[in-house]
Amino acid sequence: MATITRYGKPNMTGLPKDLGVSIFKTILSTPAPNFHKMEQEADELERKMKMERERHKANVG
Image 1 (spheres, rainbow, N blue to C red):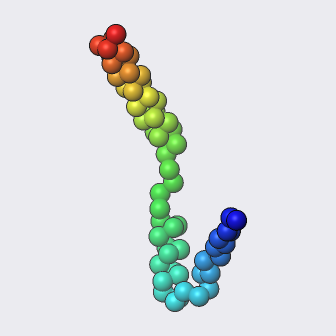
Image 2 (tube, one colour):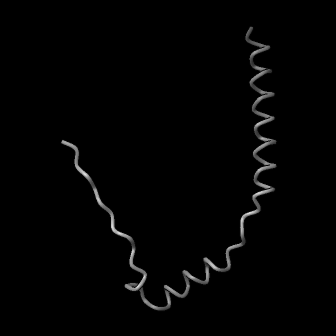
């Protein structure tokens, strides 16, 4: 018989005020992600992986 574990949402109202304010300041001051740069890095990594895979295939057989 499978058991189901349920988790509740964290309640921000239960935190001390200074901790809650600190969390919100951290969230709001976090810079937005640069999706274009992340996509370029992912493409470059994919190219390197393909090159390495083909180099490995050429050496093996």
